[in-house]
Image (tube, rainbow, N blue to C red; front, side, top):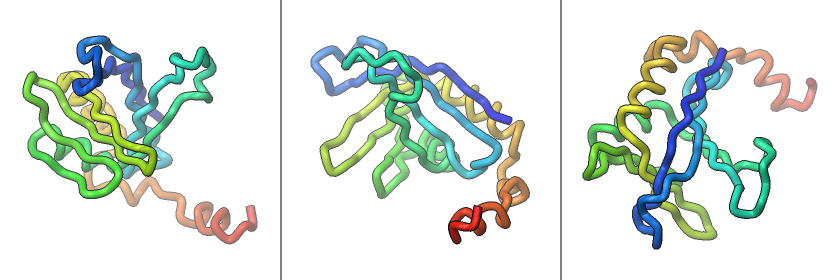
Length: 138
């Protein structure tokens, strides 16, 4: 099972801070601890969904970041000044600050927690399959 929430994000520090960019928040019960933020590569003319940029990070990080700044790695999340959620993505090539409407983030999280309640994530892990894949036997 999965949940997908279209989320228009903006880039507050860019020259066009109010221009929305279509993105998606995704959750899959097969990866119960994670959420995925997918951004299209429309700027280069790509329209194929497989050509988007997807960042995976902790569902708990996204949830907690709606209320207070969290994160110390490649992804940081914090409440924004205008009823939004700020997501900062860091890579060796640079960083981007995205702003997503808090109500859409909250709705997405509610859907994900309805599928896999907090504290029950480990019940949805298939450890045997994961170990088999890691050992290259499957």
